[in-house]
Image 1: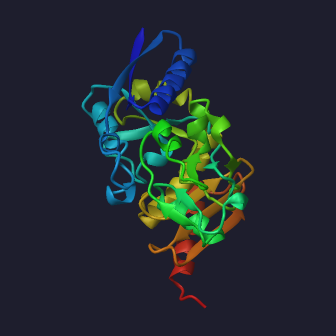
Image 2 (image 1 turned 180 degrees about the horizontal axis):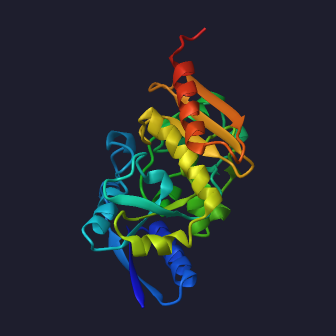
Image 3 (image 1 turned 30 degrees about the horizontal axis):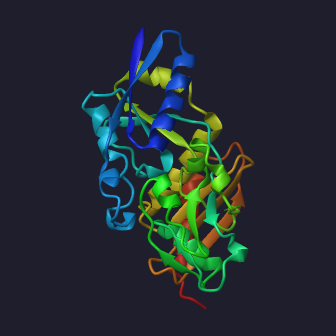
Length: 294
């Protein structure tokens, strides 16, 4: 019998994700049993400070990673969008789960039904920049907390923005008023995917994780992470990237005050080097955004 200890955050969404990974692991190899190690992260303990003021990416993962590095757990399960663009020393992404719906969604009013000057609540600078691109009249307020808390804070006559995947995990998609098209809101890098980390030297656990690795989702997430790594950015900056199953790569980048933004779309083939695709897109976005407004 092989016991795999799974570290994850203690939120309902994180627990459900971890349990889904546990089910995959026990089905992948006879004799595997799982245990769960629940961890509170900096992002969980501070549910009021805007994420971009807390350093962006890493605030929901570092304590979970530490549980693996300190051998209190064997794997760490994260929402891939929460991972910094550089792997933590001593850890490797052993598997990427099959991607759920990557899009963002509005809960409340639909985009076309929002009155001029209506309020959108979101804790994401990316989402704010993208919606300002199509509706510069909108007003924005910050939004933090777990899913239930956020759903209780829909502004009067307005909407909140959430990841469809987060609502799918908890079977709460009935709350969605509109799924935003990928050309309106390019998702955060890795959005909709689960990333499972293990210690670099734990070859036995890594071999088991390889059995549940979803190749198409890994290729997409690796492409997107290469884009983010080249920018040296985390989720505190207004950037997004997404590689779809049909090979369409979208990337978005805005400047800090949202006064200018760049969005690119292109197709890549199965033989293309996904890391090069991500890096090239990042360089193009950075170059185009640096040009003065005409």
